[in-house]
Picture (cartoon, rainbow, N blue to C red):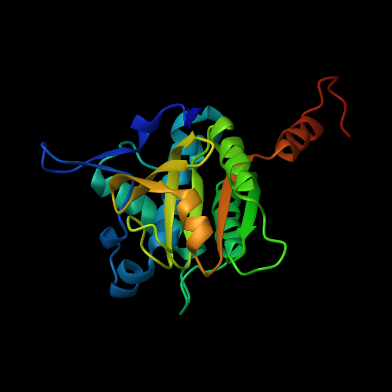
Length: 230
């Protein structure tokens, strides 16, 4: 079984060189040394927010620029960064990521609902089964939202950097493998999530976002159809 966000091409970013393009943002585009070193979390959030804006009309304010070229997307990354500023250990907890995304959206008048799954290291008692990772990723992709993925140690998955956020845009669900396609450093790569989960000694997390139904309730309450004030 294969699943993907509906329009992955929306994450294609044009470079000033006509013959070059990127898939999602790259943290090296940030303007300061620290943000370039530690900015994988806000870069991942920038990917998610841009995609939601471009694919969901009600979420248009989440991306404030007229194109998806590198210059405009870099400005978007700088807009997102103050809400997801990495500390000395980066964004090493999923709530730092989800709270930052929600705060950025709220500043633009959008209420997002956060969906998160904490992933303990492999020696943790009561650790979720791999099938729970698969079901969470399915839910995110079916809702048409890229899924943020944090790992603190790459285990035996050689295509993954440790202490790093990447953006899941597609997945292949097999009985003995869970292959995901991610945006990482402006490139599209594949990872074996099952291999990572079974071999990492440290924790990680997954996160995606959806429109918060409460936002519609507030609009309805403020604009009653019968013309009466509440």
